[in-house]
Image (cartoon, rainbow, N blue to C red; front, top):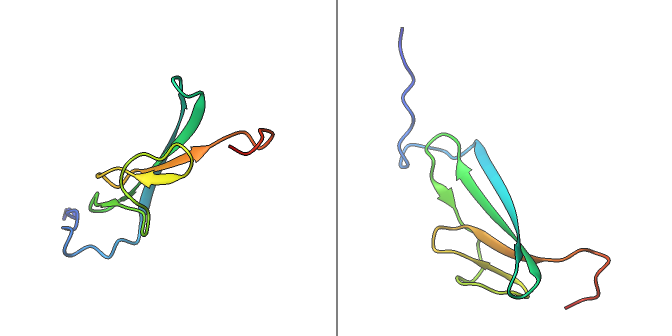
Length: 81
C-alpha cells in the first residue's frame, strides 16, 4: 500500500478548501460579528481577504493577522448603523 502524503505549501495548488463561520454578539456594544476562516484542505495554508485592512471594525470589515475575516453584521430588519 502506498500512502499519499499531504502536499507541502510550495507544492500545493490550493484546489480544495475548508471554511468555518462563527457569529458573535459583542456584549459591550450590542453589535454582531461574523468571523470567517478559509483554509486549504490539502496543505492547511490559511487564506486571507484581499484588500481588507487588519484590525477590528465594528461598522465594516477587517481581518486578523491570521487571515480570519471579521465582518460587522446585523439583522436585515434593523435600521442601518
